[in-house]
Length: 114
Length: 112
Image 1 (cartoon, each protein chain N blue to C red):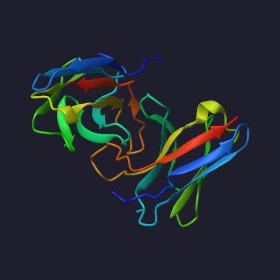
Image 2: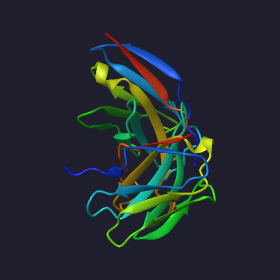
Image 3: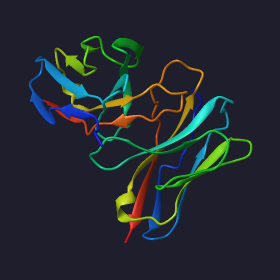
Image 4: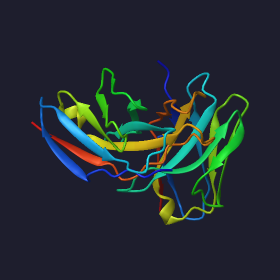
């Protein structure tokens, strides 16, 4: 079965550079979520999109932005990178249910900021 | 969202059952109880969820207390591959926001 695909798998950037992370949800899933997980920490919700519109916002820095495109893939854009942005970034997708729908997570993008 | 409390860590022997507890004393009537796990260097993975009745699937069982203020995830025969962080998460079906809010889960160590 198709899973959530994230690219790239690893990304190394310098401070103050920009980075773009991509997420391809499971086909027919209408909601995409982005999470950040720092070393030794639990996943923190950043932002979500439902049917290409932003649906909820978590602890996403102003330097970050995201969007969902017409083909439902999503991109997380990160500018003016800081050392503290080094983390594992997960994307997840789900289809609208009754509030009990499952989230399916990708394998993540490991971002290292040097 | 209502809060959950889990032990920081637990150990189990391989091929023995594991009972992972979760307290959620402020649970509301519309909160579903979800369990996810995260294996090392992987994204979180759905395990099981329920509302009021006990649930079984191929991965695990979920036992929900009658007053719903606690629940237990049961792995019937732990394997080394079950070593992971297990998260108990409440999700209100009435809220429009669909994201999961991860708290501090339980690090399960499985001993050979």
